[in-house]
Length: 266
Image (cartoon, rainbow, N blue to C red):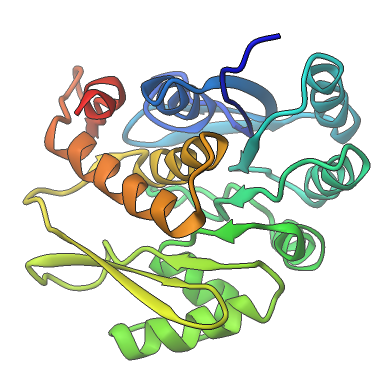
C-alpha cells in the first residue's frame, strides 16, 4: 500500500486547463499529492469566458465519489463549482456516508466573467448542507459578501463577514482580499472562530490570472493531505498562488494562466 498522500476534488471542468478540476489536479501534483476527482459539472469555458454548462446527474456525482472510495479513502478533499442543489446534497451525503475528511469548500458562485456557476437554490443548499461539514471555506470578496450579506470595503468589514460566515458552520473561513482596492499588498483573512490571522503578500501588477481561487483551495487541500495544520496549509497555499501568478503566462487570446507546476517547485 502506498504512503503517498491522496486528495479528492469534486468540481467543474475547464477545457483550457487553468481552473476547475484540471487546475486542482495540477496543484495536487505540484505538491506530490495524488489526485482523485469527481466531475460535478462540465463547463465549456476558456480563460476569458464561460460559454455553457452541463451539470451531471447528482447520482452520477455520488457514484464517482463511491467508485474512488472503493480504491482508497483520501486524506483531504475540496469542492469547487457544484452547479445546482441536487449536486450539493449528493456531495454532502457522500461526505457523511463515507466519513470523508472535512472538505475545503471553494464556494464558486459566479465565474470571473460573470456566469452563474451555482444556482440560488444551490447556494441555499450549500449554506444548509455543505458549509457545516467544511474544514474551511475560501470565498473571494464577492462570494463573502453574498454569503454574509455584508458589504466589504476594508479589513474591519472582512472580519465582520468572516464571523457571519463562520456562524454558518465551517470550522474556519478564509476571505481572499485580492479584489480589495489597489493597496500594495493583497491581504487574506483567516478566522477559526477564536482568532484572526492576516496573511499579506505583495500585490503583483496586472489584471490577474485565471483560476487563482481553484489553485488556492486545492493547495490548502494538498497541504492538509500532507499532514499540515490548517493555518500552515493556508499560508503555504497563499505563497503558492503568489508564485504561480508571478510565473503566469498567456496562451493565445485570453487571461493569464497560472504555472502550477513551476510554482510548486520553489
